[in-house]
Length: 459
Ligand code: P61
Image 1 (cartoon, helix red, strand yellow):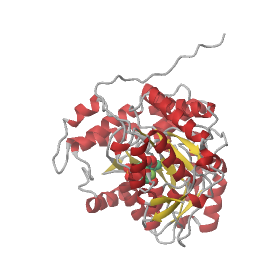
Image 2 (tube, helix red, strand yellow):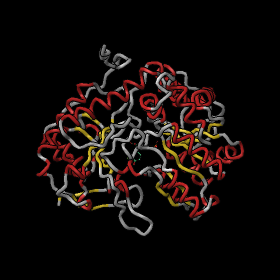
Image 3 (tube, helix red, strand yellow):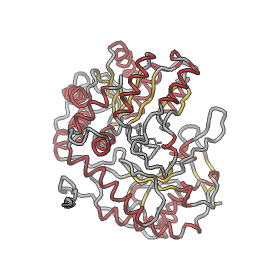
Image 4 (cartoon, protein in one colour):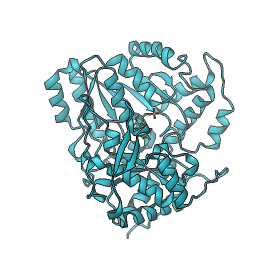
């Protein structure tokens, strides 16, 4: 007999709500123009449903808010630091903790400590801040993700996997001494929130160990990755998410974390390490750039919220509802015929702007134009993840990524299924009128991470 479907539901109820308001199309036209057609430059008050990012935008639980009241704001040795340290050791298995104000600060420290001028850093697809810190430290990022990750239509279940042949080729070409570490992200953001399999992690560990190369884990969305392993990889269906997370971390030597995602807080991050000598250097460096090594740029209360958020992030009902809500939106869009990245990832649905707007060249910024149009239609804010985000290479030429996407990123525990329906209907409307969408030109380009502050105008 076929098993009856049992639906997921949010494993919480609402206690406090934040009112949001809708704008008129005229108001949005004015706001978008003022923002230089860049959704990063919109004022949040002009946004109806904010799917710009899942970073720092999650709703904290009453337990986290209660924890905030126990903030020990001592300059040194805050009690909350020790709670956070214990949570990192227990849930992730890393030995030593260096707190930072957010993820990129941890990336800065590890990059400066490990990368020398002329080094190469293989990684499973670039992330904007991660690659920039590698470059600022004198390194060059080399993409070693499997080819399927660059194909939006491939339904490979683990598109975040490292291609071990590509990695071997990098080792053969440059030699292990030029490779300070492999930058391994779980739930690969730029690929569409695509997971890495445990099998791949095991093989990666084996290969890197053979050559004495470290693996530094970008664990920003590790729980989401673990959920996909549980759902898709043989042998994991009955394992608790917490155990899967621990096993993932066990194949790596250290991690950078933006706690603003998985860990359900509005601000925070850390670097976690297993090697004492490296930890000592990092702990010494954090006092230069972030703050004392027992707060690293966070208030005591923030560290408490992260410690509690980590425990909540591996709860089965939480992670199921979180990822399935994203999949709900994705499947709705697929049913409407909208081209998206397959399979639907863990933190957002990625619209395939290249396919939606074939009449625009990549130099006309199709994803940027599509994100602008979606905002105009309904006040839904999304993010460009294409040529603007990819930036320029060392010779100053534009990178042309294969993926030209608009990310609809779902904050955790914030929006309901009804919000997802409204978003899907707006995307459908924009999709149906896609032939009328025109391209953009960039009229202001900042030096670093241009997508944040660049300005555009209609062609
Ligand atoms: C995001 F448009 N992500 O996805 P920090 N690693 C990974 C991240 O996703 C990440 C960081 C490191 C953001 C915020 C953001 O191009 C952008 O705590 C996998 O933000 O410093 C952040 O962590 C950095 C948005 C960052 C962007 C860079 O929305």
